[in-house]
Length: 68
Image: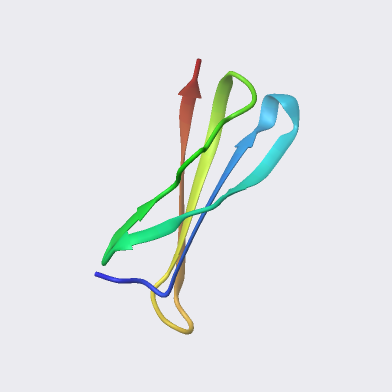
């Protein structure tokens, strides 16, 4: 499934850093990739993904990831 817009950001609350936008490239229908992504610090980062499925509807989901 293809979506009109996909946005990703990362935040590190313990250092009051972010949200840092992640630049994505669509590599195929329904497949996106980020290249050269480097997180500057270790810790528990909040990853947020927002998907716009049409002109009106948008859904945001989040999870934490451990770096380092």
